[in-house]
Length: 255
Figure 1 (tube, rainbow, N blue to C red):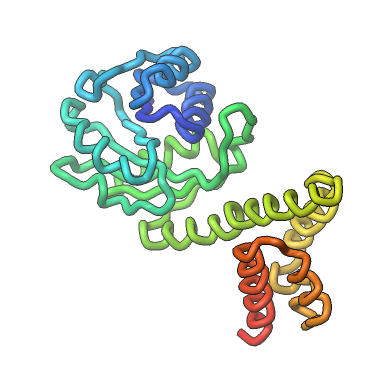
Figure 2 (tube, rainbow, N blue to C red; figure 1 turned 90 degrees about the vertical axis):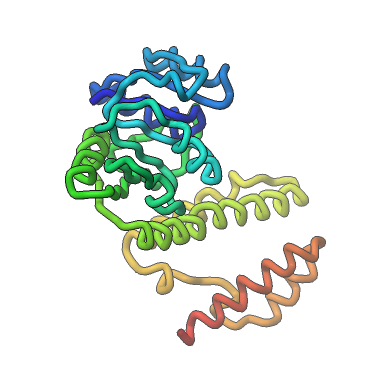
C-alpha cells in the first residue's frame, strides 16, 4: 500500500519502520516539527512535506500525533484522493473525531509503549482496528496484519476501556517503579536490584490471575508493617498513593 505518515514521534517512527520493512511505500512524512519530519522521511525513503495542503496521493493517511491535535490535523487534510482512508493511532480517542464528508476513516491502535531508539517486535504487538464501514475496516486490518500477528476489530467505546486498562498496567506501574527507584537511591541502590522481583511478578500472571498473585502487607492486613512504611515516606503525596493503593488492595478481596 501507499502510505503517508502524519507525525514524527515514537509511534509514527515505529509504525513507519515496520510498514516500510513489510513492503509498503511511504509516500510522505509531515510533522509540526519540520526537522523531525525530515529525519524520519530520510529513514523511510519518503518525501518530507512542510504543509498538509501539499500531501501527495496515498491510499492511507496515518495520523499519529498528540490526542488533542488529531481533529485539527484531520481537518487540514483537504487535498487528498476521495477514496483515501484517514486513520489515527490513539487508544482513547473515538473514531468519529475523523468524521466529515469522507467515507473512509478509522483507527489503528497499536497497544504498546514505544521509544524511538528501542527496538520492538511488532509481530507480537496487539493492533486494535475500527473502520467507518466494512470495506474500510478490512483495509485497515489488512495493513495492520502486514506487521502484526495479533489484529482485532474493536469499537471506540471498547477501545477506550482497553486504553484505560493499559494506563493502569503500564503508565501507573512505571510511575510506581519511579517511586521505588527514588526510595532505593536513599539507601545507595537503584531500580536494578528489584528486577528479579519485577520479572517474577510479571511471570506469575502468565499462570494465574493478578488478583490471585497479589502478595504484600496490604493483602495480609499487616497494619504494623504498613504503619512503619508510611513513617518512612517523606512526601505526603506519595503517602497518599501508598494509602490509596493499600486500601484498594484490601478492598479488592471483598469485591
